[in-house]
Length: 288
Image 1 (cartoon, rainbow, N blue to C red):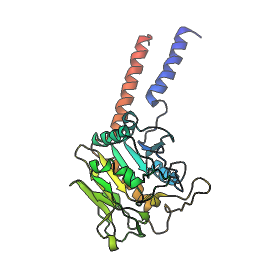
Image 2: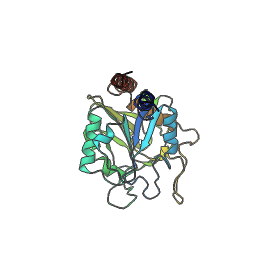
Image 3: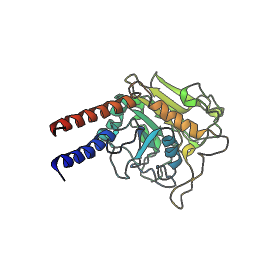
Image 4: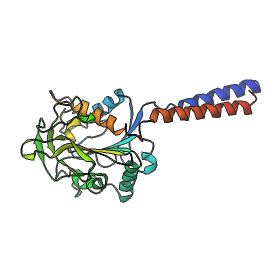
């Protein structure tokens, strides 16, 4: 092979990697945490288990979905690769460093979806349930999990005209907590009726810095009934008459369309232009 032919082949390989970003997806990147005992007890809230339909629905809506490993720490460097992070019912506490990373991520413009469960739902008996775990840092972001245990299907309170509730007429909870508001900018999106009238089932906070946070008090609505053998799961994702898939996708769209997150396509285009520019410079250096 001649020197010029070899150089041209090298340029083609490099250009393909530069332009495609090594095969990276064009979708909005979302990270699911799987490293805080999301499979403890009868739970299987991971994208390869009981939350697989959730992940597939997001992929169908244009998201690029990834999950952490089972023992991976949450770091700010990791989070900054994504537009939003989903925390499905953690049963192991986040370290102080992880809590700080999550808060900094949101306050810097990222999106966070906290999915809790009812009070006293310590699946691995380590002294911490998702309510206690989230309340170690969520209140600083405008929301908190209340120590309640609510069964209501469908939720019979108010469904607001917020984008997250668009097309959502019925949703349920099969043992979940309510969500409290700790910031003036926080709001209830869907509220309970009956004896829990006015308490939030789904709540959100649009933070002035550009970040957004959503909290749901029950992991059950997104359970698709699949998971490890022996787990007692139920397909609430496809529960007849419920709009859980629409609610899930709406929430992720809202989390990733704040002012600071709406330009992912622009950012990708800018990166592509930079890569093409680098390719042209490489070509000139090789005499093309």
